[in-house]
Length: 166
Image (cartoon, rainbow, N blue to C red; front, side):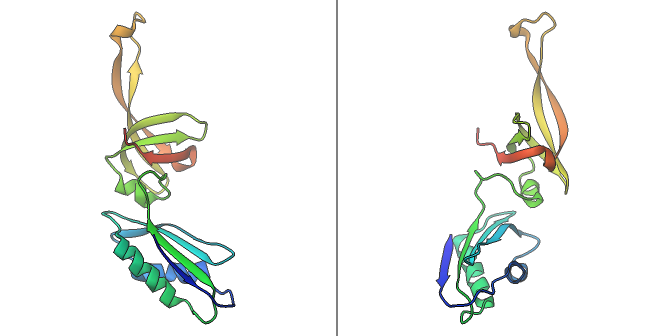
């Protein structure tokens, strides 16, 4: 992550200014903002992702671009720009689109988990392909079999969704 500290007196940093600069600098077909936050102390934290990858050089260039858009004489701020980690939960629909075909772990709001393959996604939901155990007719474990199932899951039904490394 690239961090820049600037010390002055007045506070005028807004999310709108930072978001506008990000929109100017990012390639909308490839790059996207995962999260943007600004603390009361004007600590700006930007997490980016892309359909391919975000390099440290790209994060540095974006950090410098944001800094140039802010008035050094009127504002006290720090900027941290970094890339999303595979171990972090997915935060927006672009990340779901990026990981189509990948293994994921879904933690539902009720605390249950399900592993599977992310098949596709839209603005409200995603489709998970998973294996379900079908009990044998006689109840013996040696006759277990699994069937492929698919289910559409609303984002609102999940607590978190992560890439599955297993």
